Image (cartoon, helix red, strand yellow):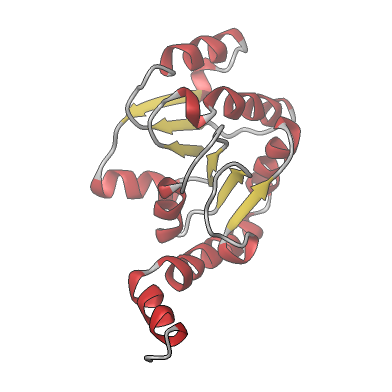
Length: 175
């Protein structure tokens, strides 16, 4: 399955994510879509759209998950998928990186991440391009494994507080 983690809110671009998922399914994907997080008004619209498209049995809502349940859900996913209308940081992507979950994100997710070298596939295109990235990861376990390792390493190198503090000291000429 592909996993989304965050509040089910219009700003998270879930309708656009569902569009990409539908293209992915129509291209032969057998993966489900799991949405983890509290409903902030979007669940009924996504449920109705999934039902209308005939994929309601493949779109799952868990509500919020915490602790090991959340981390396990991330670890078991093909990839974390995030296609927001706007995202100031993308903490869910970082949480996925911490457990080795590759991410496919839209370019409106403003993470300070370089890209695939850090386990994150950034899509600047439409639903078809996003869907193709999903399908590619589903069909290429070796690439997924490479991105998984890169996600863990990239998160530690660029987002771990110890690494950030050390880099700050070096740049300030103290370390």
